[in-house]
Length: 115
Image (tube, rainbow, N blue to C red):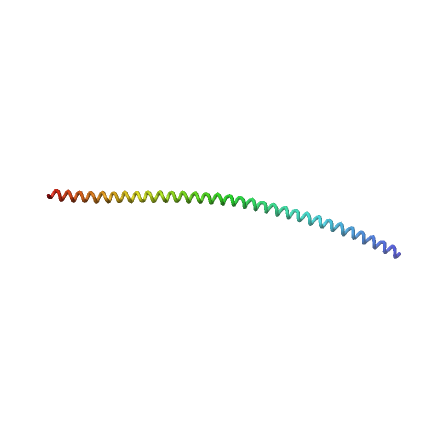
């Protein structure tokens, strides 16, 4: 009877060990699957972030080039406007000078006419 109890106990322990080993393997497989899914999801998000970063850098370079071109065009327009302004001032100076010459000639004419 004691040997039968011992044998039943050992068989139950062996069955419990096998069951614990099976549960341990299932738990490891579940955790492995979970970490694979999490890592895959993370890799996908990181890849998307890098792609977006490259696109943003490309757009930033294009924007910088466009801003530089706009700056060059603005400076050219400013130079052109300053040139036109200077030419208009010269025209104004010439008109003023012509008016002064005309008044002087009139004054000389009046003096000569009196003589």
